[in-house]
Image 1: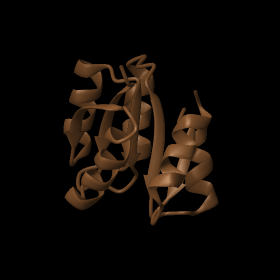
Image 2 (image 1 turned 90 degrees about the vertical axis):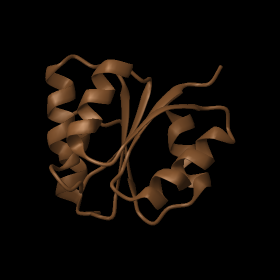
Image 3 (image 1 turned 90 degrees about the horizontal axis):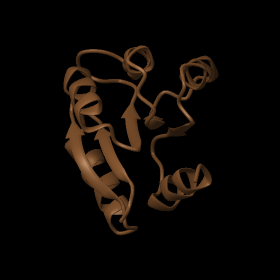
Image 4 (image 1 turned 45 degrees about the horizontal axis):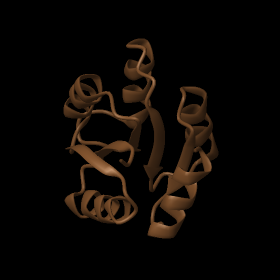
Length: 119
């Protein structure tokens, strides 16, 4: 059985892209969230092994979500995905516990490579 994954992105298109790439490779998508509030609720209730986290959401930024998940003691591996490629933002994400940071646009191959690198 594949790893349980929560996809967090405000774009339905991006969620679909990530979902299809991961499902094809044996991952189980246990939830999808289009904003930070839903993301935090789902992360805490589902305790997924992996979370793909967009940094720019309608109600908060991914870095703030990371802070909350860390405070709650969630052990999910988090891969940040964002169009924002500033080194300072990337560094902050990694400092807050993200294991990787992917810059949009990206390929399914790149996504899988990053996810599998952490296994």
